[in-house]
Length: 258
Ligand SMILES: NC(=O)c1ccc[n+]([C@@H]2O[C@H](COP(=O)([O-])OP(=O)(O)OC[C@H]3O[C@@H](n4cnc5c(N)ncnc54)[C@H](OP(=O)(O)O)[C@@H]3O)[C@@H](O)[C@H]2O)c1
Image (cartoon, rainbow, N blue to C red; front, side, top):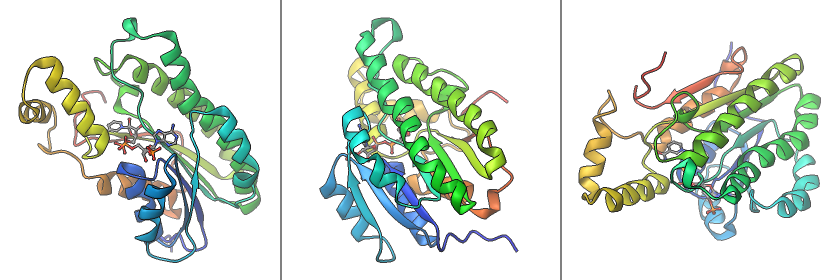
């Protein structure tokens, strides 16, 4: 019988020092996986790691936006025998596309697309060998409906979604699934900074900004990171073995598109 059981599976979880990544590391560990937590901050990663059930979890501090940092760590990552890759990190800064410096696009592509490509190339051979592979990209509902005021993010996320769909077709014959989770308004430090930024621009209080955002959400509340992590964990499990190449919104029904 198929089960949500990840005992014996190893997971590399990026952006795991807070927010959706930290909640995902917890959910995967609670399902039995052994987790390596990745972000720039070794101290904050260790604090998350120390709270996980199980004893073999470790941390890897690196900057996904730095090609040098990534390349330096790729052999270690490739040798880790990972079955699960959670491709996640912080979103690009807000602002209109037309106002963004081209360097902001370049930085976004390095951190989100090229880092994902380097990591996938390091991890896929081990997944093939294990006969089990799950790649889950944490991107944004903007791949279905671009979000006003997130010009660089909209652009880079669209590229990641196209990359992921392409990979899902290429890696299907190896039994490796590739899916995207599209978070809606989720209660993490990223949401806090977006709310503060909007309040400043709109000359409104943060409470007013939050209330206005919630008018867009049929379920009428923000998402808890644990709820996003539950969807990600399902996609990583044997239960989701026939699901690949999808964009799964976890947005309380906010997206208007089919
Ligand atoms: N929260 C939302 O409402 C929402 C909505 C739509 C989409 N998303 C997207 O979903 C993803 C996760 O969201 P979140 O809210 O959990 O974000 P978050 O609270 O900002 O957390 C981002 C995580 O990524 C790590 N990180 C950032 N830059 C990094 C880098 N250059 N290299 C390595 N690690 C890096 C951060 O750790 P360090 O600082 O330790 O490196 C942190 O652990 C983001 O891409 C976000 O844009 C979020």
